[in-house]
Length: 259
Image (cartoon, rainbow, N blue to C red):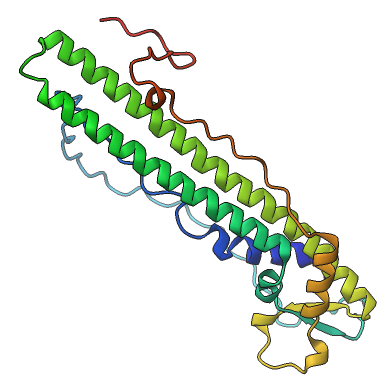
């Protein structure tokens, strides 16, 4: 039973509040002035003529199950259960590694949302400025500025999506490290107490305090894993936002735009 602990702990750890909620505000699909709706709407296909249902092939008759099957040969009797209980949420609250991961991931998410709001405000300002220049620009210049603005917005959105995905992957990797260490610690504590069956606290309605291994598991986990590994965040600011007048390099594999 102890070998199945990592599977149950994975489901509990990965459903914790650390990974709940969106990593960032929803990406706004920007509308650039002068851009029309691309592509006509697809015509709804004509209603197909209903076909008669195909006849099902005749099923083979099922074999009846014998009401009194032959008994199996005697097997090995399982040992007497010596039960221990672990409150995983309590272990998380008192784990220095878990709290370190939670604080770091929350800080990165807050920084991501802050940068996103600044970028959205920047694009709104440029959009309004472009709308004010409509009367003074030629149609060719106006289309060129609109395309450039739309391209820079799309590049920024891609960068923020990549940052959000990197934050979530860092959180999952750190939680997996804590989960693996916790599974080893639970087996260690259970073996030291001669326990052969460990149950999570939510499955138990009542228990005497000696059955609870949570305090010992927490203390041992903090001894063997005080901090989890969190990769450094690589979050470059959008190049177009740093210098809007600088020419943009085409995306990898993309063909240069021709006017």
